[in-house]
Structures are given as C-alpha cells and as structure tokens.
Image 1 (spheres, one colour):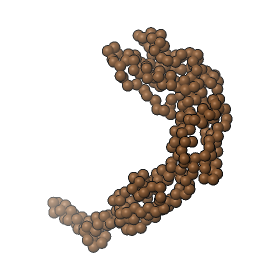
Image 2: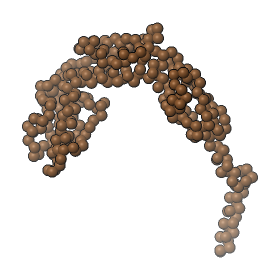
Image 3: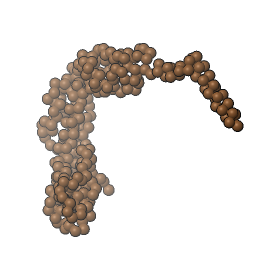
Image 4: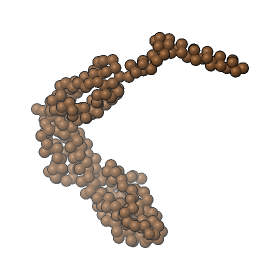
Length: 294
C-alpha cells in the first residue's frame, strides 16, 4: 500500500513537470512568461502643451514612469488634465494618446489647448428680488481676465447662501445660456428666489428634565422670524455645545405653506457631569437649509 501511494506521488510529480516543460521546454518558463507580460510605463511624452509643463501635467494626471501600464489610469489622468485646462479658461481643450513598446511602454499624450476664453459679462434674469448690482458683486469671476470654472461654481454657492440667509431658502439658480463672442464668454444666470419664508412653529422634542423655555432662551431662532440659514447653523452649534444636552438628529424643516416653515428640534439630555465640548451632528454645506415638504 505504501509503495502504491509513493508511486502515485512520483507519477503525479513527473506529470506536473511535463506540463511545465511543455510550455517552453524549461521548468521556470511560466514564471518568466508572467514577468514578460507585465507592462510598465517607461516614459511619458507630452506634446502641444504650452500652459502647463511636463512636471505639472504628470502631477495632475498621476501618471508616472515605473507605474504598471493601465489604459484606465491613462484615461483618468487625461480627464484630470482637461479639467485643469477648463478651470483655467481653456474650455475647448482636448487630447488624444497612444503608446508603443512591449514591456517598457512609452505613453504619448498630445494636447490641443484651443483658445483661452476671456471672461465677458453675466446677465441676471428671473425673479431676482434683490438689486442686480448687489448680486453681480458676488461673482468674483467677473474680476478675472479669463473664465475660471471653479471660481464660477464658488460664486453660485455664495449667491445661494446669500438668498438662504435672507429669507429665501427655496431659491434656485441655474446658468441658462453660455454665449461665446470674440473669445469672450457671456453667461446668462436665471434666478428664481421663490417666496420669502418665515418660521411658524418651533417644536422641541426629547426633553425630560430640562424646561423647554431654557432651550428657547438660548437659541437665536424664534416663531415669526424670517428664515435665516446662519441662525439655523448657530442653533445647531449652540445646542451641541451647551453641555447638558445636544441634538439627537438633524434639524428638520417642515413646509406648512408657501411662506411658512415649521422647525423640529430633537434633543437628547446627557448624563449629569458631562461638560461642554461634546461633538454633535455637524451637517455638510449641501445639507443646510433644505426644506422637507409634507
């Protein structure tokens, strides 16, 4: 029985060796074949670029020599490069790439920067409510010689916050028309301020030991106030830092009419002996000021 098992093992070993040798006549040929099949980036060559040098392009694209060659990484890198060009006013920048080599890959990336688009004018339309000059003064992109996409997006956020802080949390702002004339970009921005919103009722839930009037005395929002997102944010900060209770869930806004909103504050009392500085819920910028309709 022992000899039979030993013979089977020997036969299996011989069979396995034959399989390896038959691949290329050498026992380690499979390992060497795997080594040869691994492709690495040996060199990256850019052409057509004037705004950004090679060092900057490599950093932006995250394409580096000695990396394993992967077409997906190249495509993603080029996408990042074109986004950077657009941020700097080259709205029509485009690119194509190719490669050559077996295991040591040379990547060639050609960039067509196109014309750099200058910043023109911004025209406001719609239900603006506030003076146009006041709103236009918030667009920092107008002070730039060239159109900057990131700056423009930040300007839109700034205007949204302004409306939300001044009684119009339901405002919608949308770039409506982009018109390029003589290498200048003119933008039409449509604003729908909506109706002014007031706080109708403020409900406080979760109190067991603390009297409700204590909470109402500390917070800067009250029934009848014009909605102000800054005061809502201050309310969150105050409640989360008083030390003996905190918000147990995000502040909830319930729209009760075209011009009214109820605010629901859910708090949790903390065990006695807890001190200030307890970290509570801190919503992200894109969550603040949203109204939940019922």
